Length: 281
Image 1 (tube, rainbow, N blue to C red):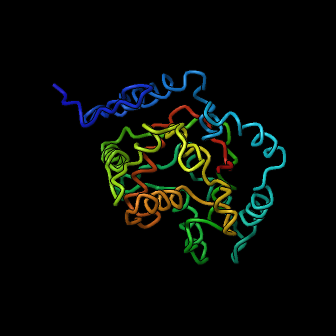
Image 2: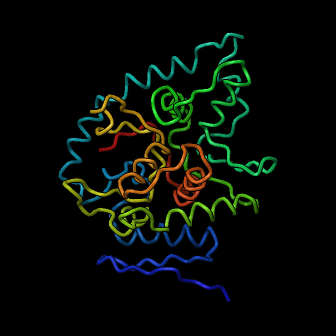
Image 3: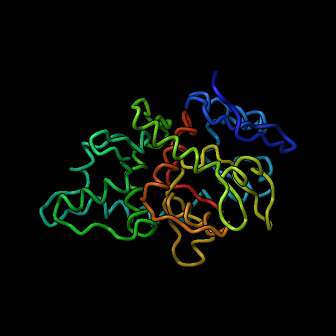
């Protein structure tokens, strides 16, 4: 008999149980089913709009729709396309590497040979190194974020479909699942506390986004980051910011903790189409 429960939380909208020994498919059904019940008017594919899709954000949505007529990230996206196409010293480009990469909607990809997860960020730096170029040290924003957008936007509209059929991939998935639900920091919060149990609720004037669809828009243009002069950010930049907000020590971007978390979230987002880049509050 499978042992089931670690925690069950009443939110006022629904009760969601985290099954510690459930299969990934059972996890997907429970996770997505929770949001389908809680926000019954929001179709699955709409979750790639982040908080903008939630009914609690309806008063601000019209402003967001108007903003998207001339997205604030367009200039940065065009720079990224140029950086992507610019030849290396040996005459090759990122396209020469990317022709052998998996499509963006299946990342992170488990590599049995190294027992590691391939991310697009990691593949970009591997491409640079293989062509005699210096890898990009800042993997949270700037040029790296622009290059990830340049690759991922080619697959916009494709549904997230991460393969974790390998036993090694399942181990990474379980690490990410544990990270998502574990409480940490001085505030003793988990990812789920904000983005599952409190999704749609207001905190200091902001509405908390749903965990469902979270990774489908990254890298994103974030208003808060733009005010600081660094508007774009990768998903690992956001993870570090979340850790800081709960007063927990952040982990290294592209380290095993955040790669596992990225995998778990991607699996939970199965079937939701990519929409890169996106704008967030």
